[in-house]
Length: 184
Image (cartoon, rainbow, N blue to C red; front, side, top):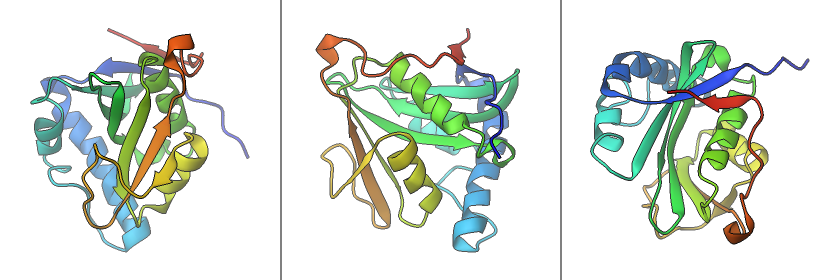
């Protein structure tokens, strides 16, 4: 049974968004931890108290975060690192469990590719145990698993993915997603 795509919009994350984003991030990571590891709670350091955003988003000029909204309701977030050479990093993407399996991640990734058309490549690391993430990155977003990447540290227990975007000189690597918009 296919569900209708949700209408999505995106806004840059501000300090004022941290409490609500942290609630959504906590639900998303705890849900993954319960499903895939049998643990009640679990996520990256600071995921459940806002420090994740204070550590990985706000201190760096290269990092950009967007909150994912559906009809004005905050349902997720994404942090990307936009590097001068065009070899960018997906830091995190998370979606409230109540909105998962409805195309939110794929629509959000289309938004990111359309927003950064000059990107030469994307890379990320995701936990080995997060099988749903592996399917999403490889099958839905076109990433390929690689043994290593010079821009991604190799913490034990993670799998590294990379996506080459092709010849950016000839134009955008992807077509803009028709169902997404960036709001101010």
